Image 1 (spheres, helix red, strand yellow):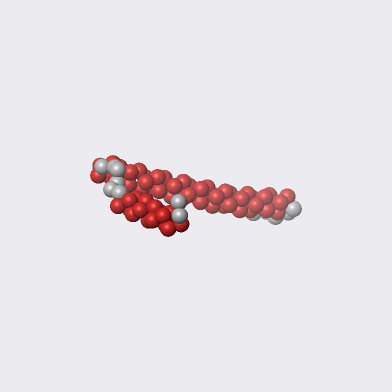
Image 2: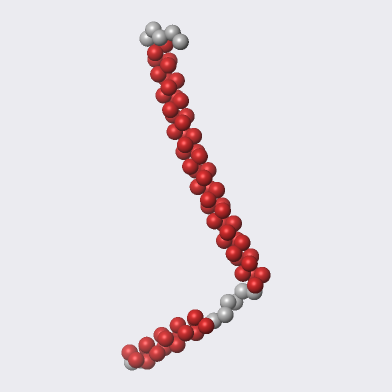
Length: 80
């Protein structure tokens, strides 16, 4: 196959791929779009849960450090 024939073949295949109609029916396309949207929402929910969990973990650490400080201060003479 010469380089010119190869280029013609590539252009012919690319043109056929571009002109090919979708193989799914309209109902199937709607279902696929809804499934993709649902998966995107699921990913967004998962990310939100992770963010909330991390912020809760950080706040619980802050509270624990405050509690330890109050206990230390009470052990060293501070009376609330």
